[in-house]
Image 1: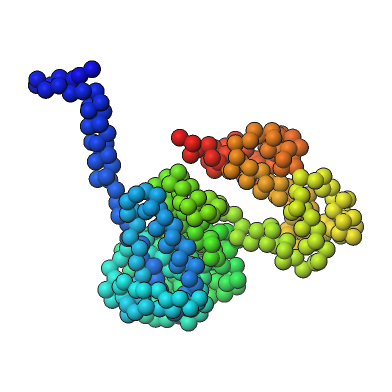
Image 2 (image 1 turned 180 degrees about the vertical axis):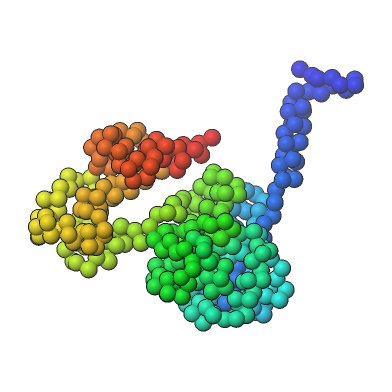
Length: 353
């Protein structure tokens, strides 16, 4: 088949190619390079810098074009030593810096020395109006807060810094049990790997979930923990339980959350009474033994929904809920969504095409 216009023949294949090229060119014109500027200082935590930087660099690779240009800024433009002993090469200084699309303030041991540093506070205050998204990683949130930029805004930081955050910066609306927070242009994450979660959320906002999922696979990380998820999760709390019997019981539950874990069975295994077990769980985890088991089963069900196309009924059985209805009630009660809705949003189904 041919198409004719002004006497010139145009084959269907060529017409389709021409149309695709026009579309591609239009898409290329809408591509935007975003500058990512990361603050460097002595004893900065290397992972707080490298984690988000790798997310943005891997995004460039997945997209096939440079969506994010990454550079380091230090006070005088000199290289700095990280907490690991490795050095970061600076591309600019405070004086020469003129803003960025994404500005990242990492944390680390060096935060303590710079927390009330006048030159750093002045720099953060001056650069903030010229930053589209202001990102604070781990204890870097304290540096941002010290400049007054997080006053009356939601923020989080590493759980070890919680007391300091509350004492020194009471005007901040701290959400210290959350992995990351968003409040307007300000974005904060909890400790270390949570910076990767936050960076992935920014990539998802810019380029869609499929790209963010591809980046997560490239980095072999979970895509992605919800911002409101507790940074001090049930497994970590259980491992740090002050009671050895609770720690041992947790290990048994974690090894087989699908077992019929009645309160009586758990109490017997812990060598205590049901009443004492209830009191101990509320003290250690702020939840009953049954709620604790349900959360572990819910976590298992979520992993199946995210990583497989198994039928919902089968997942309910494999996760220990025994029936699809019980699992559905648990999802609605704790996550506010049905299992099918959770899979649509976080599972493999949305990247098959």
